[in-house]
Length: 106
Length: 301
Image 1 (tube, rainbow over the protein chains, first blue to last red):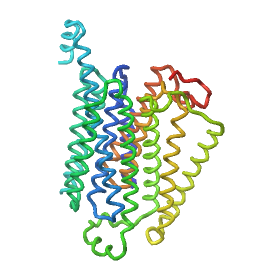
Image 2 (image 1 turned 90 degrees about the horizontal axis):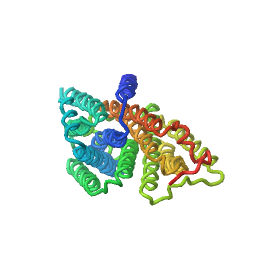
Image 3 (image 1 turned 60 degrees about the horizontal axis):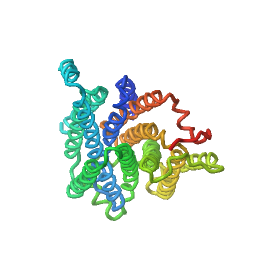
Image 4 (image 1 turned 60 degrees about the vertical axis):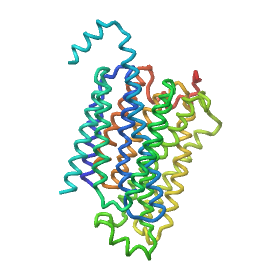
């Protein structure tokens, strides 16, 4: 239990530090992406759904698994679509700027 | 050996989530960042399939296929303009899942006596830990945060999609009602925790405590989000996203699963920072947004 608490606090500190400057256009995709990550509860749903238990336990686990999978699969896919849109918009920008930006990244 | 491998895979997944979040903050690397995080999730899921002696593989695969299909169809078909509300809905599902996992954990102790003997032999030793106060606390937290996230997210979904009025919905005595519902939730949480030692021999306080808590949490989520104007919804969704991270972390404590604790804490904390950044971009304080409706400020929805 104490170990888990330590892990929780340290991971929270990482979470506080990992977000710094986000351009406004990326607010929604970042929110959507981290929402998909919070779908990690899919792991918990799998554990519960895969265990022996009473009927109630089984059904609750099953519904949890469906809900969590919707969150994970849908979350990552919709984030990807948002970012694709973003890229398409950029390509319409002057080719020169595009090239310069690409150069700085690679 | 096997558990070590699984834990190491969880560690890799957590690292991928951190890299992913980092990369999502720059336009050039954002898409790769999202894919990195998705790959991390795939690793975590595959590792988990090896975790327990799988007794119900059909149900597990069925759940993954059904959920995956629904998620994929929604994500593919949605109009570009409707994406924020879809994110809100997905977030709601995440909260719901966390709460359901915690409730399933309570229900697991309610195996009828006669089948209990046979089933006990199947369960790994780890899962036979007696129900205790600490476990009760983590379960009620998971249910409360998860269901507030669920109903709150769907109110946000309704407001963003225009199914509910974007204007703040306020009625006389609303603040008092919210306070009472919050108090009621605390009392029912107390019931569950107090009844933990006698559970599952005396099951009623815990079971009914969880049932009442579930109902009150759902109402609380609605009451907290409905007085906020539609224009502020993106900030609210971001905050609810942070909550769903915390709900996942609480579920991680319930199941003693490090993957959930690490990733949940990560999203909980980073979601809070992102919420603050979004507020700053709108020149508002978070408190200002959350009390927007109560302050009598008209929304522009």
